[in-house]
Image (cartoon, rainbow, N blue to C red; front, side):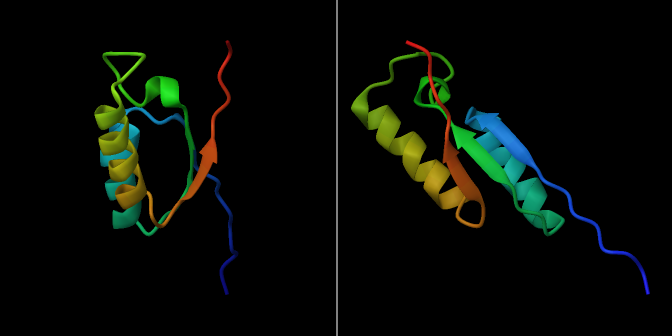
Length: 77
C-alpha cells in the first residue's frame, strides 16, 4: 500500500491568470487550492476599477474558484 501525501497550493493577489487559467489546470489534475484575492489586483491595468469592472471580476472569480478556498488578501494603505 502506498503512502498518502498532502500538498497545499496557494495563490496570491487574484490576478487574471489565477482566476481563469490556474483553476482549469488544477481541476484537470483533481487539485484544489487557496486563492487569496486582493481588490487592488482584480484589475491588472487599473488599480481602481469601476464598479462594473469589479462586479465582472468578482463574478468570474466566484464562478471559476467555486471548488477552492478563497481568502482575503490584506492591503497596505
